[in-house]
Length: 170
Ligand code: ADP
Ligand code: MG
Image (cartoon, rainbow, N blue to C red; front, side):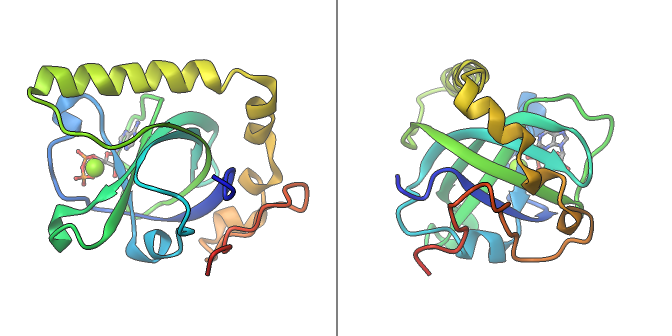
């Protein structure tokens, strides 16, 4: 996918309430404007990358880009599970992410156990892949420390060190 790595940030909104948190895997949803800006070549499926809430630390993440049942599957959603235990929810805060790589396409599962096992294996794969030096350096990208990060300025601008543009395809 030519758009990777892909940088974006936006407000965390309430999701579809499918009980991800009850499964121990909360997923923070981006507002529609962030989803609408996704380049066309970023297909649905599971991605890994880096994420930070507000001005906080940068953690590993897995993201599901999928069809949102709330909009009768006509609209995409982007749901980020940050691989970190937070003390509190962060609805309304600005989430900054960089999508680094693709793990697998979307699929359905026959049981909740199978779904949870798949997500846990995605998390393990993300943890491992992100240790590669070329992926690890994105963690230190200026994108995560830029002042825009604290002022919820949209859209996000990637640092000059990253030639990728976030709006390509639009
Ligand atoms: P919703 O349907 O509203 O998305 P979830 O059960 O998926 O509900 O919970 C997501 C919310 O949990 C996020 O919006 C965020 O405020 C909070 N949260 C706490 N820890 C995490 C985490 N590690 N990753 C993602 N979201 C988290
Ligand atoms: Mg969610």
